[in-house]
Structures are given as C-alpha cells and as structure tokens.
Image (tube, rainbow over all chains, first blue to last red; front, top):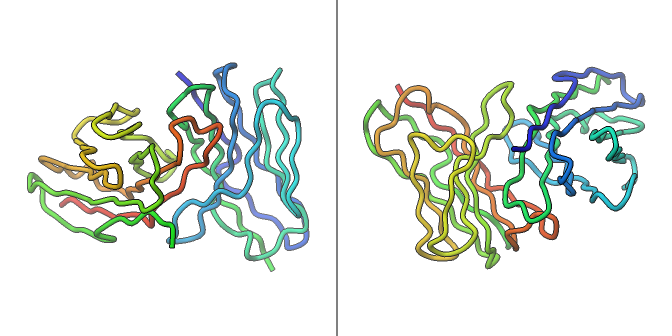
Length: 112
Length: 115
C-alpha cells in the first residue's frame, strides 16, 4: 500500500523567509497530492493540491512541486507571516483509490 | 452552511464503557471517513464509507465500528474503549469516492480521553 514520509517534523523560520516542506510517496500509481494546514485546535483544511499531470502549481505565496520520477513533492511558502504558523500535512492518493494517506505532519513556526 | 459536524467535541470516559461519536454532513457527499490524529503519526484512517451500507477498513480499524445507514451520517462506535484509543478524532467527507476529483472536508474534531 501507499506510504507517505514527510520532512522535517518541525521547522522554524524568520518572518519574511521562505519555508519548504518535503514529502515522498511509495506508490507510483498515486496521482493526487493535497496539502492541508491545521491551525492550533482546529481542523485540517485544504490549502493547495496538485495532480500528476502537472509539475508545479502556485496560489499567491504558496506553491507545490511534483517530481513523479523521484516520487516526491514539496510545499513552498514564500514571504512567511506569523499566521502561517501551523501544522502542515501532505497526502497522496492513487487513481481509483478510495484512501488518502497522510504524512506525519510538519509543525511550522514563523518567528516575528 | 456546508459543513461536517461532529459531536461531542470533548469526551472523557472510562475503560470499557461503550461510546459513540456522531458525524453528519449536509453536502450530500458520497464518501465519508474517520481518522485519528496522534503526535508524530499524522492522520491515520480508521474506516471509510463509499456510500450507504458500504464501509471498509482503513489502516487502524481495531477496536472501532462504523455504520452508514443514511448518506449524511457516519457514526464511530467504540464498543469497549481502552486507554490506547485516547486521541483526537476527525470525521471527513468528500463529494465523490475518488479523491482525485473531490477534496476531503474535515469536521472540527473530537478529543477523546479514556482513563
């Protein structure tokens, strides 16, 4: 079955710097890769996703890149702000798969 | 407002006392799922349902039961809770069973403590 590994487990950056979170997956048939943000005490919420037919997707300060050959994908946050502080989860799902497998999460702290 | 509603938000119980956590969605979603969140382990799937009367095990189903008698409801049942089931639980739903075409929406979570 699918396995998703996420690194780092914690990340501390200065406000205004960039943050990068990386995930690797094991199932080469996986074709959908969402990222969820979970603020303290709240539910995970989808912030961006990418499908296997594209290599990069951007939405304002966040972007996701996908390398299918290496089976890894990354979340990039530029010009970080204190409100970006949260736990971020990557996930992967295969075509016709009814399971979404999550990584272990990255706790991002943006220092003012 | 479109949402996934879980109840209760917090629950403290004792070992062996049966409990049910309710989950309801008002978006006519086909797919529903339960996850548990533990530090360092991320979100692990307990059970999922692709439609009414169709349920299947996720990665950590031991000690849990579910049912899907109506499209909107997907309760999680712990017949005999144990301390290792102390966790934060999330219900989630999506429009279609195939996540490629429909993102997962989460409820607000239920923090369960079993003593």
